Image (cartoon, rainbow, N blue to C red; front, side, top):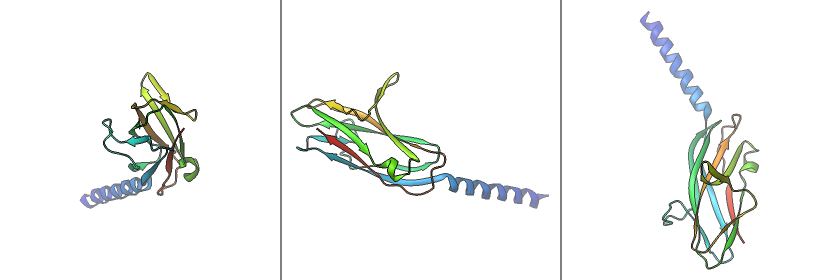
Length: 151
């Protein structure tokens, strides 16, 4: 009887391990590129704007999950700028992973679309960058780029 219980426990552990391994997707780092004619806009990982961002790490994620990271965009120039964001994620992932940028806090939360956002000189604009992973996303590693175009 004891050997049957041990065998059942080992079988369960093996099935659980295989199921977990099959759902782990990837570990990734996202490049962040800012194209600004006068190098007036910078992206930071902290509200005090001391840690400049060149990549964002989402760590290990699973299918059918979402993850977000906070970033702060600062206009360090002397004039008001309009910033647009573009991502290569949907193309790279075959549409299996989508990304978004939003700002504000519920119930006044807004998604930053392709219309751009205006930032006055010296202003820091907090943003949440996030990704949504489809349930049928293949198990692999993805790399993509977020570009912030300053006009």
